[in-house]
Length: 391
Ligand code: GDD
Ligand code: MN
Image 1 (spheres, rainbow, N blue to C red):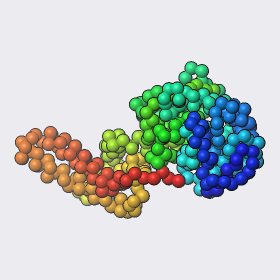
Image 2 (cartoon, rainbow, N blue to C red):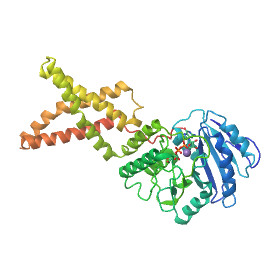
Image 3 (cartoon, rainbow, N blue to C red):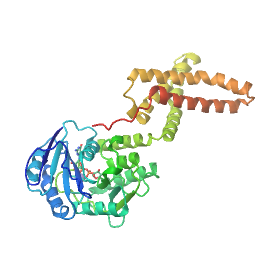
């Protein structure tokens, strides 16, 4: 990563970290950029017009561009009466979200405002976001398109509006409690108080950094300010269908972080394993195999199906500490142990505790399910100690 910082009006390369703006109430604007050279001058102009007269500020661009955006920033910074820094990342880990976390980590002011580099987020709102946070004693202030006075005017086309609406609805239904009071969890424009967030716990994946922040760090008090999402000044949006898939993966990962939700997911995936299991049994017996070996093989199909889904949907971020075949082997052993254990367990419940066959079977199913879940957590995907934010 290269880093350059400019003192007001000149181009220098001082301190490794951004200017020491210890002034209370000062704000660092964190702006992620990916090939935005045509927007930089306009953005800095708008910031200059509306922020420094009301609030001491600095700007940190976190750049993953493949064009000349960093050079354009350095040149434009010469006309700015506040410090402007460019952190150019050689490796764009975590995409937009990763860039924002890097900017947050580098910022030193009491307040941080995250905003896009294409002028869709009006800088004139920055002082108000910070003032609202101070007034309301909030650690997070979201600029929202979905409260009175806000609008998504700049969201290009009916398709983007529908996607944005659907994503907001889905997200709010998945996290009803954590997102209470946040009408626009998809917003990329928000202010945070430095002391109230721990960037260490964040594992950003793509665009939805505000969602990541609210769900993982649970800021104690959230306020909102309406804003009108502007048209892009120049260039095109970088979001894509691939970004949409990343968002769904991000959502599942966030949801699966809660143990109860993970257990429910584990159960649902387990139940879905009946499908390949029965299909396999049907195909094998039709091919003339005796039903006992057919059962055994078909069962392994169900296990493989479960393993693939569990790896990708539930334990995506806990896979690194064991090799693939180690995890697959352990998972298979646990799944088969479950089957082997079930029969003696039923016998135990019936003979020792005098239960009926049906009740005993149900209880054995639940018992082995819980054992298998706990075993999978502990023996295959052992939760790791507090992981450092990926940089
Ligand atoms: N550093 C970095 N790395 N910046 C990126 C990357 C990346 O991989 N991808 C995009 N950016 C920057 C862009 O250069 C821009 O400054 C900002 O992130 C937003 O990207 P856009 O491509 O303009 O996104 P959008 O307008 O489609 O989406 C915006 O609005 C959405 C709400 O509808 C973003 O603010 C989203 O976060 C928001 O959900
Ligand atoms: Mn944009």
